[in-house]
Image 1 (tube, helix red, strand yellow):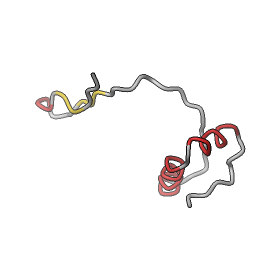
Image 2 (cartoon, helix red, strand yellow; image 1 turned 90 degrees about the vertical axis):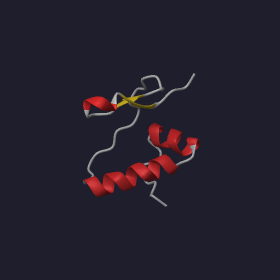
Image 3 (spheres, helix red, strand yellow; image 1 turned 180 degrees about the vertical axis):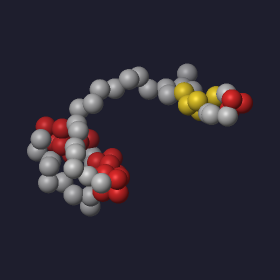
Length: 66
């Protein structure tokens, strides 16, 4: 059963329960300020699965946030 949400808000800080298993880091990109990093993250999230595979393989350095 999938459960995610906030638990124990009585202590003042909500604790989030993540339903996904731990994942490994497969791609790291540097050289960004905070605003450009946020734009780049959104662009990567919008990529198709094939586009993400190309990015991880090193063929997608020129991808823009179209």
